[in-house]
Image 1 (cartoon, rainbow, N blue to C red):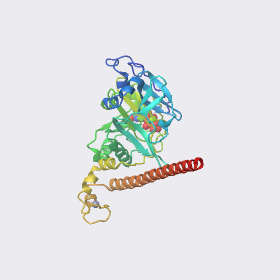
Image 2 (cartoon, protein in one colour):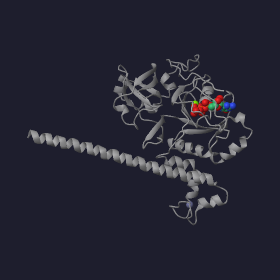
Image 3 (cartoon, rainbow, N blue to C red):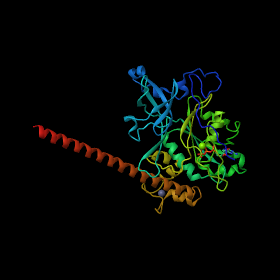
Image 4 (spheres, protein in one colour):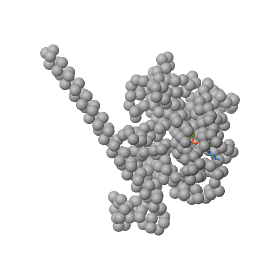
Length: 377
Ligand SMILES: Nc1nc2c(ncn2[C@@H]2O[C@H](COP(=O)(O)OP(=O)(O)OP(=O)(O)O)[C@@H](O)[C@H]2O)c(=O)[nH]1
Ligand SMILES: [Mg+2]
Ligand SMILES: [Zn+2]
């Protein structure tokens, strides 16, 4: 069964979200509903307060971005210096200042949080979303459940400093909830919610994660039910969803673009496509936090630079011998660590290349200037 639904986001009008009936509190500042906080307000100069409108980036397309602010939604053309540098380029969730009259972007405000990944196949970082407060790491209770993938997502989210909750969808299709809970035992410090994403009552505990003005990102692989959760939390079908493949429970990559959706009486939800590859880069702290048990054990190894392979006095391997730590988890930790080191090196090299290229251009320019001066002397 495949459901094709509208994927247009509702227009936000002054004092209302999602075209929903007015409710108590709905008359409050629309910027606050879009996630405007003192952290952003204090970045504005007096001049900017007079000349600019802050707007939130709701979706990014090839040549234009969709933003929302006090005037509702509008499209802004993507051009100029603000968009030249891939790292600096506005991403979904960013706050921009638009010139009040020309509606052109003036600058991007500093971010309170940022998700990024190593772009698959490229030697660059790709921005995923900015200014996210809370994250749901979504997996499903079926054969697509993959603990190593949860650990990867967790390292990324921990690095960002956002609040995180683990969500298991499709609990209605499984009799084996304990197995999934048990699989996640290393993450008992995190809230875990099992839901039927299609059922409004079942997802009620998740409402605490997307209160008014809060931005909640839904991360997880294709088919786990991110868009279904979004629709249920919004109470309106905002995003398209479609059935997973029967043979292996994998999704069909139904959601194609990242976008922020304001939900009635609540905050903003970020729906994103299930990411096939989520390469980690510059996320040392996130990795250490996601594997806090291994980080702690490692401090008890005899050698400070223990690689936890065959060194004597290795507390990590000892824990594995006694069954306190499982081999898959240790292997995944090694794998993610190696991958990150490789990606960090690639990024450092491409930055060095950029610097070298910059120096080359500057030297060509100064040679040309010197020649010109020589001719005119
Ligand atoms: N029974 C049941 N079906 C669910 C649940 N969550 C999602 N589904 C179904 O799973 C399928 C995939 O859901 P989507 O919401 O499209 O998944 P997604 O994570 O957005 O997938 P992508 O957009 O491809 O990344 C749909 O047919 C949903 O109806 C659940 O908790 N219970
Ligand atoms: Mg989707
Ligand atoms: Zn060791």
